Image (cartoon, rainbow, N blue to C red; front, top):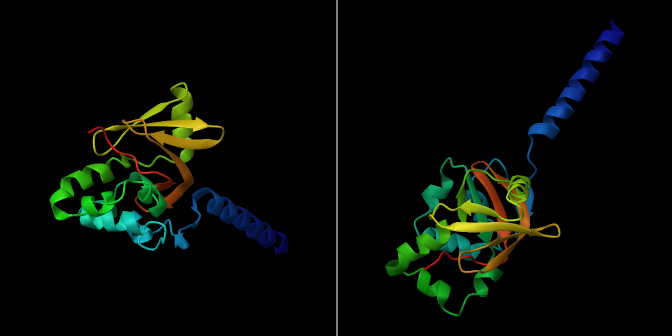
Length: 186
């Protein structure tokens, strides 16, 4: 009986360990804040000190409800430093109420429907011989490609952004942090 109980405990422990490693998603720190896979994109993003500009833009564009919805979404999330690379006054102009449609267009250009982790994107790149085309929610296209082991996206204007933190899992998708703002064709 003792051996049977010990065997049962061992099987349970192995099953628990296997289940945990197979299904659990790790919490990643972004902008000094933990990004919990049990929270949605907006619930996590508001805590990142590196994404205050993006969060303000999402609020100004009335996209909070959309990015809090079930999704799933793949979001290429520019950091504050990425927004700082834009010409002076660009962000201030975009968040004005009269520019809401333009801001919505730019922000939804950073979003792809579905949950694409870095491994999925890398497979698509390999399958497409080095460049995968990703259709954005905005309707435009981002081109994903790799240089060494780094993942990049290029917009329709030829601007590129490097993924600096990949696979930040959310309850409604995944975030890939990028170092530049990408823009759709005007």
